Image 1: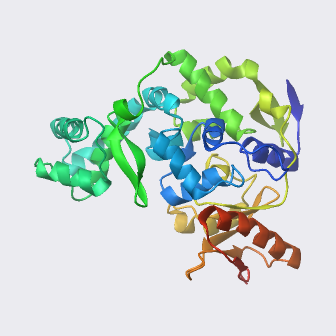
Image 2 (image 1 turned 90 degrees about the vertical axis):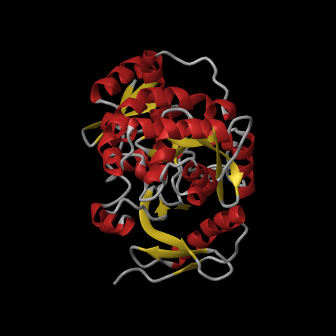
Amino acid sequence: MSGTVGRNRLLQLRLGAQLIRNDGGARPSVRDVVERLLAMQAQDFNQALWAVGLRSPGSTRDEVLAALQRGDIVRSWPMRGTLHFVLPADLRWLLRLTTDRLVAGAAARHRELGLDRATLERARGVALTVLAGGGQLGRNEFLSALNAAGIDTTSQRGYHLIWYLAQTGTLCWGPPAGSQQALVLLDEWVPSGTQPDREEALGRFVLGYFTGHGPATLRDFVWWSKLTVADAKAGLALARSHLTELICNDITYWVATARFEDLPRTSGMVLLPAFDEYVIGYQDRSPVLAPKDAQLIVPGGNGVFRPTVVTNGRVAGTWHRSADRSGGPVANPFESMTARDERAFLEAGRSYERFIGARKSRCQPGPE
């Protein structure tokens, strides 16, 4: 199947695929949300909770935390060396596709930090000892255990040790612990089941991305997954019968056929968290973000994405939580808001407030 679409329809389809909708349809569960997107960037834990919550209208922060407590979803480093939420059943095959390249890419930094193979394996031994039998340790507690075993964790060594042990299948983040999560052994927290072979996994990877992110391009997928172009093309060939090809401005986009046939038309305003997949999940962000505004989302190109205000599929500003006790959203629009925009922002803000239990949203003037 194939067809031609304009930018507005492309954005409507993308919003629908990402479960960012306001049509009053059925509310997906926390697990359903993560399954749809395959992987959701989650290095900022609290922002990532809202990324799930906004896609499950009416849900609360406690509901997302409960899903993590039950192990319905899991948080680890499945790709790009970045934390994501994924389904437990997907984590191992994702790691098998991505780990070798990521570990090889980190080798130079590990040498700079003095993390040789012997040290990395000693850390694995400590993890297997202190976490065996259902053990759960917060980050600082785990680093203390490494230090007690004579493994220096200063100067970012601790972060890289945790990353390496998770990337190579020993650790993952488990149940909530305070404002973050505890580290657990992957084999205990996520029992291993039947895993797809490499060819099937490539097809799943491609289809999963275009199901939750389409319409998107193959280049978008390569950037998102950090697979080689050859592997991406192989996965596309395997998933091709389940995809619809769309052309927009002479560029080829792909969307899962099963979703394309019933994706709703969506519009209005929504408040997205920092690092949300709707903004960050693509190599080319120009359909949703004007190039002139990119520096307002990622100041100085430092890789830290701010929360965004999205109107009819386009990024129209940023927002932040109030510093007062309300904790409600405050808008920083790129252009002055109309009275209608302000009402839409207040309504969108109420969804966030209900999610976290805060009150009061307000707007600030746009830039001069």
